Image (cartoon, rainbow, N blue to C red; front, top):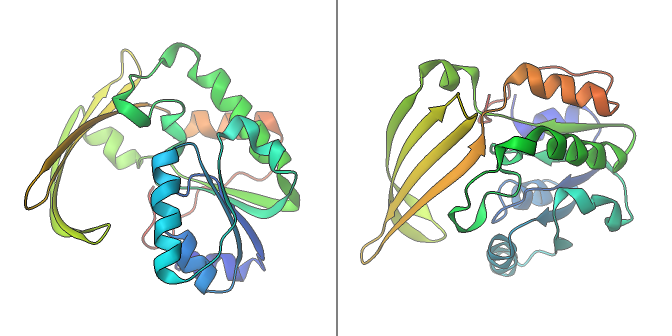
Amino acid sequence: ESLIAFLRGRQVKTILDCACGTGFPAIELKKAGFDMYCTDGSETMIRQFRHNLEKENLDIPNKVTDWLNLNKLDRKFDTILCRCNSFIYIDSWDGNTKLNSDNFLSRAESALSQMYQTLNDNGFLYIDLPSEEEYMKGPVLVENLGERSVDGRMTKLAWRVEHDWSNRVRVVHSERQTTNETYVHDYYSYLLKHEELQLLLKKVGFKDVNKLEIEGENG
């Protein structure tokens, strides 16, 4: 079951992608007929997202905002998407920022509370984490992703993922190589266990918390 089929099967009409990045899958969901609204905490991501909207001749309302300010959208949705492991990067995605893991759980709870309050009655949050399989395979994983198109340019991608459970920190060392340039970034995130996320979701008010497998999505 694809994400589009999953959403259609639940009669979803309005969707907030609160970690939209450069526009996947928001642009495809818009083309499929869903009423989309997109936010991201990164100005760089939103800038590229707007560029991609222009190329597709599409209009999706969007805004640079973090999860602690979702109430300021003054709107509610049938579904909120928080995909691509975005949730574990609270305050630590841009600029190779090192994670402050000491108060991650309290900030995570506040963010989830905002998401809960931004849903319509009977709405639902779709959120993912790195797979339990990845957690079990650590502490170091190396993956060469080969060559693929990134923002219209052929790019060689490689990742090195490190798990530091003593400090609850996950580090992704990313190398992107184009014809003329090489980009290197270290992304720091919290090693949040699946059962911890489930407890946080229930704490802020979500009643029915289930693990799902959807084709093409993370664990």
